[in-house]
Structures are given as C-alpha cells and as structure tokens.
Length: 298
Image (tube, rainbow, N blue to C red; front, side):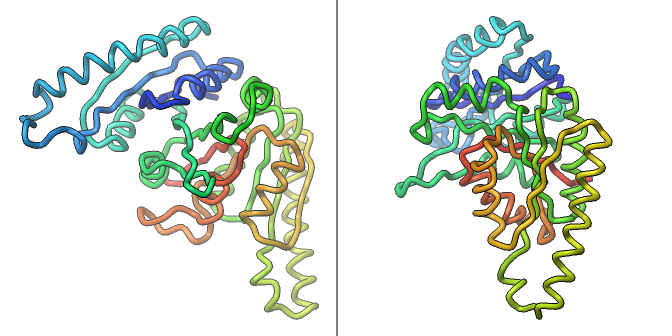
C-alpha cells in the first residue's frame, strides 16, 4: 500500500530517531524514502537576500547536504532506496509540492514538541500539511519526547500496524479512513479496535428514550463496521461509550495498547482550508501513540 515515503527533515534533536521509526515501514512494502530539507525563506537575512541563488542559500544548501548524509546512510543500510532533496521556500508548500512531484503515498512528520507545561504540540508546518494536503500523514511519537525509553520506542515502531485503533464519527472522512484501514490487511495487524464516542454534552440534552434510540442506532452502525472488517479478514474489537471524544479516544488507545491510530483528518465540523476536525487534531496532538491522518479531500 505504501511504496514511497516523503520525510521532511529539519535536523532537530529527534529527527534521526523518528527516521529510525519510519524505516520499519519497509515491513509493509515501502521501497524508497525521500529525504527533504527545506531552507525556510522567512529565516534568511533579508538585508542580504537576493533570491534563491544568494550566497546564503548556497552556503545553507551545502551544510544541509552534508548533514543529510547520515540520514541517507541510515535509509540505505535498512535496504531501502534513498533520495536527497533540498529546496528553498515556504516549508509546507515545498513539502506538498515535492509529495505530488514524487508521487509519494505517505508523508512522515518530524518530532512533536513539548510546550512549557508539558503538552505536545504539532508543529505549524505539519499542521499546514494536514490542512492543505491530500496525502496521508504519519505523525510519529518518539518516546524520548515523552520521557520514555528504547523499549517503548520498539513497541510503537518495530511493528507499526500491530494493533490499530480506528475511531469513527460516521462522517465521509471517517469512511475514507476506513478504506485506508482495509488497505492495511497485509501489514501484520493483530487486531483492529473500532471506537465511537457519543459526545456527552449532546447526550445530556436528550430524553432517556431518545438517548436509548441514539445508543441503539450507533451500536448498530458499529456492528456493521465490525462485520465489514471481519469480512475483510480482520480480528475486530468494538468500543462505544458516552464521553468526551478527545480524551476517551486517547484513553482507549492506552487501555488497548494501540500501536497506531488511523483516523480521518476532519470530522463533521470540517470547513475546507480553515480548520481540521477538533477531535482529530486533539488526538494527534495529545496522544502518545503514533497517528496516521487520512485526508478526505477529493
């Protein structure tokens, strides 16, 4: 399903650690990893800037090329083809442009940063790739960012599709993510955990009779998804509960020892080009498990 991955590299503290995780995608058919470094035009000294062929750009390109050699060596040592690209411009635009030009099937994001109160925030470049792109984005969560150790990293990285959580809100984007899950059939999945969280704020406004109707209707939909995946050869476990979608999905991921969360990048509240679904964004930001976000753009 995945043959070629684009990995934008910024030479930050965990860049090579995240790359080591991405290399395990070889087990699911990846043949090539394209390493892309974008020289951010916004960070160039404007008093000296004379275009993309300025001395500063040439110097930064030479430095980036040398720094990328270790990453290229890692990819080749893993038995994969490596391609090195260095561009100058607005990072997210250059990343999306390269993804289309190279016809990649997946973009792997870099590290996630801790905020001053210990929260994990998706970088602005990754945020824009998800907003404006139409290629699945794998958000790795290297445990060093969370204070974990090598054993934790191995659990999430070595068999990335071992145990998959698929959340659904019945939106068209969730259906697109379901198709992605079906395509992972031959990736070594032990079990797919499907989950639907009925928003407790909305449910509080319902009468007991209406609440029961909603519960039964959602359970029937869940059973249908479960049956559909089982027909495709998956072992499936089901979760349906009333609660807060963001926090409950993260809790289920931990309870079920999930190795990857696969979900649509937008939910029912999706407004094209303005924001991506609040649930998917919060899960991607705050979960300590890797997330594969699937675009529902045409």
